[in-house]
Length: 99
Image (cartoon, rainbow, N blue to C red; front, side, top):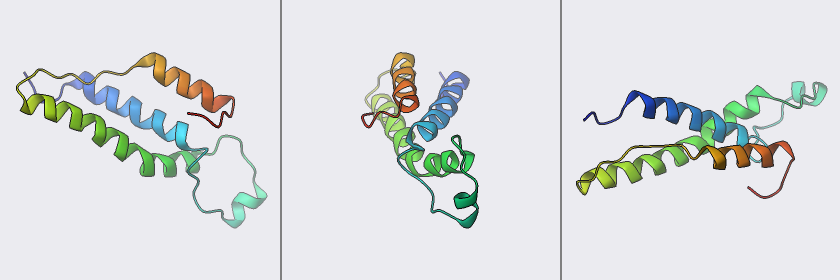
């Protein structure tokens, strides 16, 4: 058994981008002069900044679950709860203050 499988790497990439998108409304990069002039609803720079801030905490937390389980002699596979991610994206799209 490998330490981390290819599907788990794909799940981590999906999780990283989703977390960045979800938190892009809450974690914003500092405003520049260009941001004042150009008002965009979907800002890639805010998503990248939120990804750099929030995703490492979530990814490392989930990997810690896997590492602890492996250290206790259990088989552990990282999986995504698709319904939860879908609900979080839906809440972000309707600008809900609750995540």
